[in-house]
Length: 324
Ligand code: ASP
Image (tube, rainbow, N blue to C red):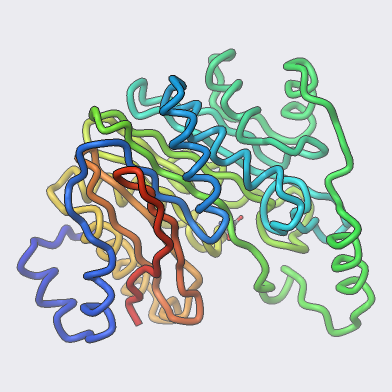
């Protein structure tokens, strides 16, 4: 991908009124204290828990893990953890990853069944093993060894949604077109002292083909964190985004001098440039650097990214800029 300098970036966005107007909202000023940035509405509670965890003496990794647990535990969030919509066979399969910018190491789990807090299992992969990613049956057995209790992750509501989908002769399947039912929680955070962590957790795309692994548990795709630069996370069509190594691309753009906002836009422009059909792609990204400056962007209005920002003791819920 070609890096863009600041002037080219400004010129490129100047013509897009909606983009410019929303840019103000994204407030990219440096922040002295801790900052948490999370995707979608579930990010509000997640940020609040993360901030509370850090304040009461937890580490930044604890903060991101506990923050993300709030979305995993909530049965009303149908895209993460307990209550997440299942695969085509009615099984909930969860993906999650957490990356520590200080150690430059991540832990991840993919296609994990029956365990509602995959981010915590991912954290233990990071802390207790020298592996980075565990998948499927092995991830499940590891979770049991770590003391997690298996449970049914379908709620009456998610079961009903799956039965309705199954009963619909015209239902969309992933052998054809992607359905539109997903919204990962992705979180990036800094402690205000130059340390960054990224995490994300998802049930992936509803009705996915069993065994499908999205971008979320893939290091460099769903999450990336480097204390020399910053952190990024992604939400949206993981089958598409995996091909762009979304999060590491953003962090590398920041390493070349882009602000988090510029880095997000640069990557999204690249995705559209390589295939104009991606002008309507469901891609949303968030990023922050070690100074607490933030960025958030999505490609298209049909997938308007909303995100929660916690900074200087205050939580806000915002809309990202859109490219088109
Ligand atoms: N990226 C996730 C996946 O494809 C879904 C989402 O973020 O909405 O599994």
